Image (cartoon, rainbow, N blue to C red; front, side, top):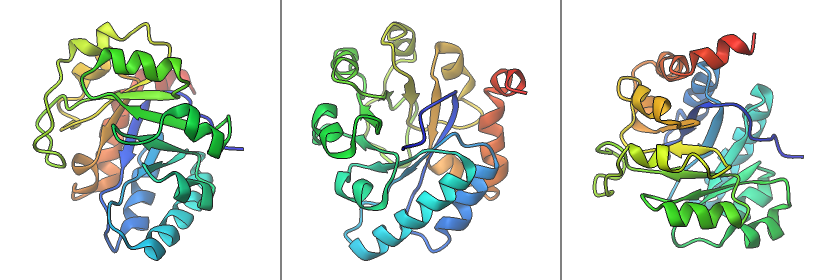
Length: 212
């Protein structure tokens, strides 16, 4: 049974390939990441499967869902908790037919509220919007107004904010309603990954206090 999506907080997205992947992911999880996405666009099938398998075990130990970027077959092979779908991927209905009804299925919606509404109707577990700020990972990504988070409040599924988000600029997105803040460079390029994760988690500090 997949680990369910719950709560709010930091959505850590890996920036592989990198030799210290498992170490930095462990730091992010120790710092309070609530979701992890394995993002590796290389074609090294054997390495990607070995890493994803190891990440499943690491995430299980922390009770954190592991999401695979795009690759439904890899998610199925390693027993990941779900997948994240982009513009050119299958729809949530088709993906659930492969991964099962309890899988977490996220959908990139960029700056489109209609796309997010359609994804929610199709059974998406969450939707993502962005880029909200200039992104070092996707420098050509179109910018999205923060008000889109307020406009999407009635979707009925969690919303992930992505794109150039740091612990310093993320508070405005949390205030606008983002259930998760996705981070790549601001987390995994930080000199202290655990400390960076804790700074992101602290933006949701009221949630952490109420859970105690």
